[in-house]
Image (cartoon, rainbow, N blue to C red; front, side, top):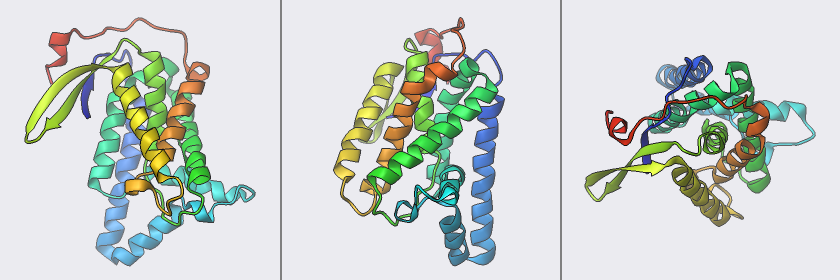
Length: 235
């Protein structure tokens, strides 16, 4: 299931959300420049230096926590980057609107931190470098589900070669997504690398963090315009 848009209109310009997207894009362009100018070996060294490697992590070493934050802005390819930033674009603006820009920034980074620690705990033997914003974004998704329970998401579901567009309540969409992460995460326990090459437990940790702490970061409820089903299809 791929989300195309949601039904909640943001009441303010999501400056931090756009800064996070821009920062991730710029860092990825830096990755591409390193590979183009110096080769794949240089890029591999760059990623190894700033990515999170569970088997090399030590809870007693303060420096070991730095890659948890730097790895949030690294991505392994164009699809990885675009899919993550698209999800953040759709759901992040409304969460920032409810939290305020500064609180949203702290929440985003804290979600990524919680996601990284969860990934380390459940895949401590893995020597595979971990990169991507999906753990932090999972925290945003958890917050969105509780803050906007009446929201709906226009979703693309490919059926063989035919695209199927369906409007799904956000609670169901995000609930199904979370259950899929749990099932895949359980299958990955004991593996030397994340099942399917995806850091499932980072997603789980970020989402649970978002669910548990969203009320601490969110301001009091505001009135929002919810698009009618007809307007949702004006993509």
